[in-house]
Every structure is written in structure tokens, then in C-alpha cells.
Length: 314
Figure: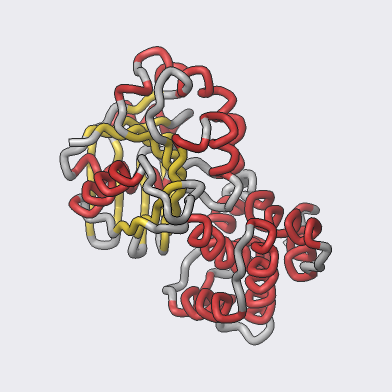
């Protein structure tokens, strides 16, 4: 049995936390506000496809976490927060996290979370990861809806090719635990590559969906919007060169084909916009624009959609 701390029990964290707890693992959730109150009073309810999962798990805010728990109480800490919250939460929890060397796994959007965590905790504690083909949202306090394959891909960050890494045994233990909990899981030898491939998809559909109000299927099958989606994906692939990755047309074609084959998914950024929450714009489009500028290349599709969203249009 593993002991897992899930920082951010929203749609993604709530789903994975419920599946792990259902399989017999000890899971502690963090949340805030009405969602936290509902988790504490009624427990976590997860609707996943045809299944209903109900678990009453320990749920705390960060103040109670630091008061009542030690980092060493956990085998791994999983961050499933919006990337807009990463910096603030790291600043808040840094003294507490420094009390142990427990590894931290990021399952967040973007390519900047792992470097941020590494700057605070050191690279040896960082596990990079991504949640693949999952849509998850808090539909009311204490209640989560999730859909999709909901796969996890994870790996050492950064990866040093050809070297045996001390984090690999834990990754294999986590992989086995996740698989037994019904979560398809893969361990990657190059997690940065996987994170960038996901960013190709995220930058392709998240901002434009928030701008237009359309789901992924409507976007990728629209004669004009599909060209914008593909263009933003291509701009993302070009920007990856700053991080030492060569993503070419084959990668873009593969990712575009993948998102086109999905069911109609309402993106997380569209949901956030509808609910009046901050958008993960800086960690998705912003990450592409910063790297494009560093390379001295244009990213006109991304820059235009980003500017429209920043000015509250759409």
C-alpha cells in the first residue's frame, strides 16, 4: 500500500485520488473553499463514464497539511493543480517540503512546472508527468466528473540519457500501483519530449476553444478553425527547439490526427472561461510565445489568439 498526497483535488486529482483509494492506497487530498468543505462533510464523489466512485478521504487545506502531516508521511506527492497556481503553492509549501526528500510528481499542463519545482526542491526530487486523454472537472463542491482513457505518462525530470537514475525504482512502484488501480500508466525515458508533445495538442486546442466556445471535435472538423489549430500546433513544435527538442511535421501531423480522433471534449481552458476562473494561458500559449521570441521566430496564430483572450474577447 502506498501513501499518496494529492495537492489539488480538482477534476484530475479527484479522479486519480479516488481510483488509488479504491485500490486500497492511503490518499490525502488538498482543496479549499466550498469544495474542501464538501469533501470533509460528505466525501468525494466521482462520476467516470458508467461508474460512480464514492470515497471519504482525508481532505485538508494547506495550513492543516503543514500542521498535521510531515512530507515523510508520504511515498510520493502528486501535484494536480492548475499551472497558474504552481508558483504560489511552492512558495507556500517550500519550508514544509524541505523537511523531507519525498519525490514530487507533477501532472499539470505545460512545460514550465517541472523546472519551477526543481528550482525550489532540487532536480533529484522531481518526477515529470502528464495526464493523457482525460477530461475532468469539479461540477459541484465534492463532485467530480471525468472521462477519457485517463492515462498517466511519467518519468525522471530531467532525464540524463544512459545513466541509471535513483528515481526509476519509485517510478516503477508507482506505475504498478496506478495500473492495479485501473489507471493506464507508462514510464518514459524522455519525459520532456512527452510534455512537449502534449503542449503541441494543448496549445492547438485550448486557447482557440476558449476563444470560440467550441469543443475539440467542432474545432478540428471546421474548415477554417482546423487550420488555426494545426498552425498553433506547428508553432509549438518549432518553439521546442529552445528546450533542445526537435519536433517536426511528423509529430505535428500525429498530434493533430490524435486530437481529431477524440470524442468531442470541452477543453479545460474553455471550462475555466465559462466559470470565470483564471486561464492557463501563460503556461500554454505564453510558453510557446516566450520560446519563439528567444528563437527569433514568429508565432502569428498563437500570438493572435493569445492577444484576443488577454483582452477579454471571444
